[in-house]
Length: 212
Ligand SMILES: [Zn+2]
Image 1 (tube, protein in one colour):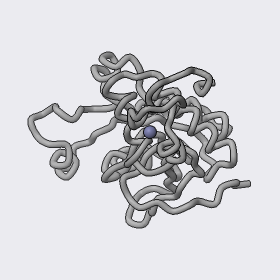
Image 2 (tube, helix red, strand yellow):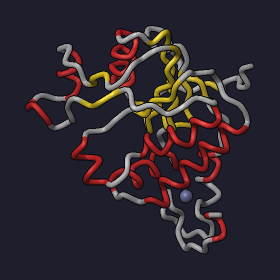
Image 3 (cartoon, protein in one colour):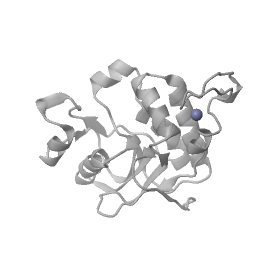
Image 4 (cartoon, rainbow, N blue to C red):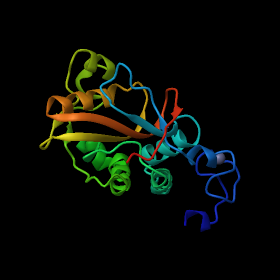
């Protein structure tokens, strides 16, 4: 549907383009889902739509920092298309990684919430907001990494936890946020935790999809 809207610039790289995404950017969102290494992590399975560099990163930044709902819709559509060809794991519940209430109020939407809603039907698992954010990047006078390294809890549990949890976030860079969320969920009773993100900053491998 978005392709029907005439545009003069690519939504990701801003080059002159009559399509929403130019021919250089469009393949970045085409999937299939890629698996991320999970050795030395708490995650049973981790997948990404693609690399954080390129069009995915540009669209995520546009959606988050410019509150661009067209970019958010395009990302949701791409994730939906990738999941339509098969799912890499079978969670019992889909949990968006939360942001802080003040950031949600400032932006009016939270991309991981939208992604979780898109993903939920493909997994046949409901969305549940089982996590609450305790603090944000700028709080407390110490850096994010320093606070996590010191054992500060980034998340609190916000509901009953059981079974296999799929965490959904927009991007993964160091993996520290997903790791912190997985630790809380496992401590609260999750049997296993997996993750699904749009863009990953690390190496990606193609994943075999179609769990049955
Ligand atoms: Zn482009």
